[in-house]
Length: 251
Image (cartoon, rainbow, N blue to C red):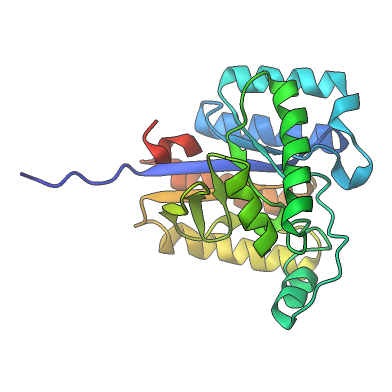
């Protein structure tokens, strides 16, 4: 009997979804939906971005999130405030906190109890807004410390992801492997590097069955990044099914 090939899927996501960035989120939503022809992508919702934009006090934005969820957008909890306010011990943790994100690796240094509290509180706010269970939890900057990893399983989130994989926290089963393609707008050098990586990825990642793309509000204000995003979504969208993360679980 002939072996069936795994489905070729495109998982696209908008990060840092918050009332603080509403105009940029609107632009990114319209852009992805225009390319994919569907709202079959994910949004990563921050309950209170940098303690300056509480979702609980933004009824208009909550209504917008519920409408998007009704249209088929998957909603993930994306930390609590997206800000790293911990002192890190160890060279590797300090390196990741300093160089892989701009003080936004919120869950890198949290202990298990605090990670659970923020996950639980964030989930309650997002689920109240969208009127249904969240799809999972994804840490800001894709950075998890040991406390956060233990808390993930205890809080029974269905899905999580980092830079290189998507997994099921309940048992650690890896559902997909491969680097996420994302863009950075913090500096000219980071913009150039992310555009270059996206160009390479359009060729190098073509053979893998599941490709993940992630866009951020800062991308919407940079024409060069948006042009790269357009080209990349179009390239990977050809011959791939716009998918939901839960499709990786066969549901």
